[in-house]
Image (cartoon, rainbow, N blue to C red):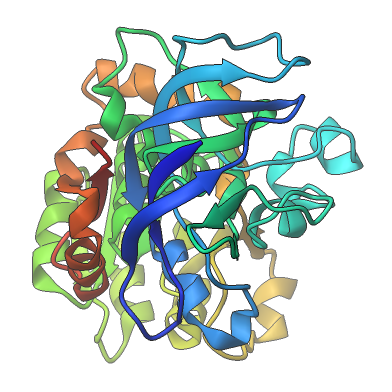
Length: 364
């Protein structure tokens, strides 16, 4: 079928919104009409040549919408269902069976190649050329997407506006999940969050919702620190501080938890040093360079933990986030600015500059 999609044809060129021929859903797949899709920093990864991601590609991995058709083996969703689309996993490996689908043994080929696990594609351009259209199993910078049924999260009509819900499928899920699932932040505890973009602010909100009594937000941008205060931070610190560790220790007397979303090694080491001897530091994303940690810090009992997708099981966790939103404890919708799909290049500029916390594209 013919759909409209934002295609990245060269790492250094703007997106082009064009007609694309999308394949029909396979036996275990679903066709979804996109209501809205978040623009995440991960959608900029295909612009990095060393990432080795084949172009042309339709990115987009925070989509939400309405099911229009299902494959012959699909039984858990039906046409007309409202859904959030999250990452894909096999469901059969040791990690998936253990409730850790983000650590799926086939996570990379399923989510970061733009193709089905068997290597086949799902879209072609008007000239007949193949276009990768399965980025994080969805490629939702489009009016429609073909996605594996396993990656869908059905949502009730009482949920927030459907066009905003896709953001819960990755970025907000990652930040909140890091706090609630990975670190298991306790009521009355202290936590430091470095970087207050969409992921970091979701972590701040989740820490507040979990009952942490000291929530320290670290960022180099004053406006972002102000936002963090609005959404649950009890203290804020400038990331350019000459002695970030000492400032954190003055506030917390040794933090119980720390969460880094910046990937900056010097910031990460400052957080680890600022932990209480039993504290845990979670790392989201790929670090920008080598990370050197004093072994004595770990010998004393501290833990450093890598985190993917907030260690979430999306079908369980996304409804939990919606429940927190309904209680006014996770107001993620207030961080969103919407754009028509045709304005995707402006949305990208605003996300990259930090002017917007979370951009959402509206295909129709």
